[in-house]
Length: 432
Image (cartoon, rainbow, N blue to C red; front, side, top):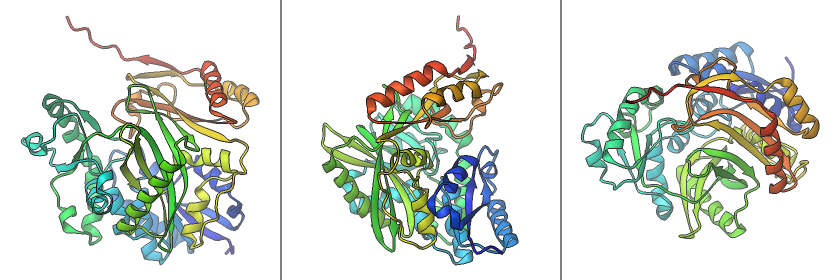
């Protein structure tokens, strides 16, 4: 048996494996899937018991494990403490992870320490015909499942009619996430008031402003913030256009966010874990609101961290899982600014053509740092994409680096002019 550290990854995929293998620590590590990416994404349903058994079997068969990590949301983050507990590894407690992920429980905890930065919120049962009346909030407000990822089943409600309309969709699909999530609550001795709640959705007053994500970690009880990434939205839409790093927010606002971060994370009791927290800074009110806490690094940011720092923040995740204090990220990358552009379309249809390897290679001659991560294949219908937000379909991610924002946008425009996406939109039935 090799003396290299044996690292098991929940949700191992090629894109992230490539990043992991480029870390300075990788020469002393071997990476294995505890659960493969395709075993936990694009599924008809989550069988939590089977996923947990699969992970245990793989690890037992291998015979050695030194750390377990995941950069993916549910069930990735939830499996990490379950696996770590069995093999006595460094990881956050399952309860603290669920306090981040259960949107209602998380809001209750945040409200104890940073009440002014938490929007109004109320849990409700989507199967209750009186739900709208019980929410007692004046529209507009947002509704979302208490557990979801990538804005799955999240809707902005402008009227009671709209609420009732969306409830049909929510009732049909809510159990896709709530069932497997509650499986963990019921089988791992977590508070019964959350395990047996009928309220599987939450309504929240809308927050607006400059959206960004604080990336940080807790090591041995100490909360450290090491980067803030801007989330730039499509104009007049709720979907993201790109993630841009480093943030353009004034230093003072970044410090205030770091302070709110420390208070929320300490209250939740998350320890020995990476995390990311989404915030809104409302410039008009000069006020910061916390949107949500994720007990993991954001894998959507790994490439842009690598472009700016010379190393992706997988290194933070890995070192913590090995019980080591992470090293500070230095600015040793080739670029001063980097972005993950999300290429989206807002109408359903069938994919006729995606960019060819030739198109990508040609652009890469000009922009060697370019990475294109495709989510669609020729011939597939956009409705086959899993876990999209409620308003758009993400075709691909385009990663670029530059000296400044102006150069970044110029590169993006040039790439878009030379990459072919052809989607034949569905015909909308004519109403006579």
